[in-house]
Length: 228
Image (cartoon, rainbow, N blue to C red; front, side, top):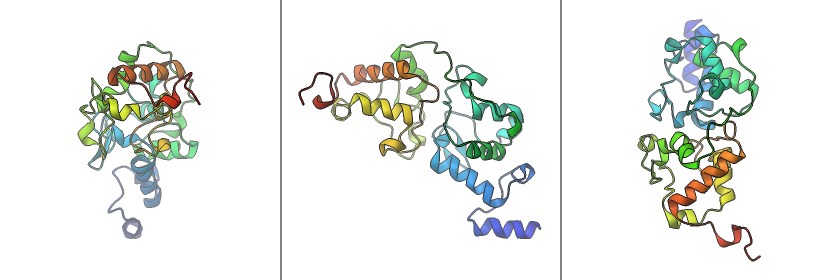
């Protein structure tokens, strides 16, 4: 049985099952699918590391099961802001089946998945404070793309202080990138979507603060009152 499992894993391109995956009842195929979701579809590796790849802002995922209990893992994947208020981890919107698979892969208990309580109560609508919490880790405290996580990313973060670059982007484009993530705007998927954790007021405050960093406006056609 173990030889057959190893052969299946090799055929899938994974050398071995990740630690604890078999204990969670995951096949080699299911484990590889979970890894692909974490690495290639969702933005988890923007902050976390898995098998030596990923960001440096959050704990490694390889051995999270040895540091956190199964209920906590499930709760954090379900609803991080209500599980750990103030955490920089946004809630990723994904199909229920994908969430359950990721929880099992990480060593969580899928019976402990929590129904999201909606957006966490905002502690501030101040763009500067929101930027420091959610954006500076990658984009840098002053928007120069030099945050502590920048070098760990496959592409460099946008420089929000670059007036030339930011003048080409409308406020709505900035809003959509923050709300729905990089992939929806044909940017890199490691840029997470914050719409599961931040409301319209908070995202608009972030857009306004980005404009203060670049000291610029978006294209004329995109501004309120612009000539058609």
